[in-house]
Length: 156
Length: 156
DNA sequence: TCCTATTACTTCGTGCCATAACTATTAGTG
DNA sequence: CACTAATAGTTATGGCACGAAGTAATAGGA
Image 1 (cartoon, chains in turn brown, green, purple, yellow):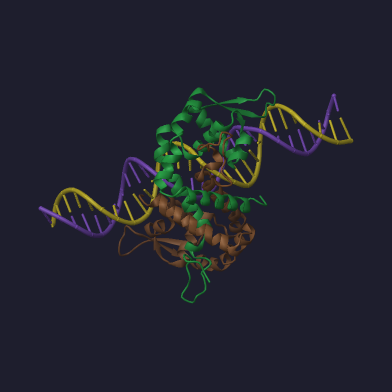
Image 2: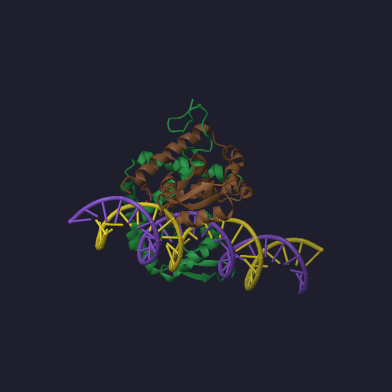
């Protein structure tokens, strides 16, 4: 038997190439549509969503190297490099070569960067309320997503 | 009580700003990591993942307008416009103004575009096998994602 | 009919994302 | 010690994504 929302042809054979049956499509749309909820919330803080994630990582630990941030956020250094320059231009972080290893760039929060955390505290609740989903549903979603991430990066 | 994979502080209060607790982060990483599985599979077809989704939409129905594709794929016309030009340059689609309404651009599959479908048939199974998740898990994931999409776009 | 509003698409600017090629520094080995 | 390999980050290129502004065509109302 097939699940309730799988698109099935008249013949009874599921169309494997039907857009609605693609998990990748659902993932892409879900990601874009949820992220778009953050735009109006992050705009007043002067952050994009990826920048917000970098700030979350730095609020957990600081300073951190570019490589370390890349591991935490699953982003290439080539993506982080210009992003961190924008955060520096916004006055939220400092970018300084490590004195013990000149290859490493220490990303440190500025005073303004640390203070921004207080304004960010309200964001998760705002988004959850806009989504209108229960914590149980969200917990379920998050653990399902973690399973997919594990599956997709197993052989990485 | 809290769920198994939620990050909780020593104090017992969950850190709402912890990276690992963010659904948006899990969504972004899951989307990127699953999409990255498609790259080596789509490369031989000369398609990027968004281009593949457009082809899926056109294989379901053709011709379609840019607006129609945008509704089906949840993409802005400003995103589709250059993407469709690249598909045209690749010889997969034709871009022609509708004769009944000159504002509308009819996107039509070329012979090569229709023929590409045969080579794409194998893709879903390939990806599912690489992911190594059961159909039940994938069905569950897809319906969960559809619920999130509905929640996030409710007020669109 | 004319004039305005709407619609469909395009263009522009900014930012994200990945791969590849490059520079500089450090580590490891003979 | 010198030479090579490995590591950290940057830059370049191509493509995706969105908002805002613009153009052309159509629809609707006075």
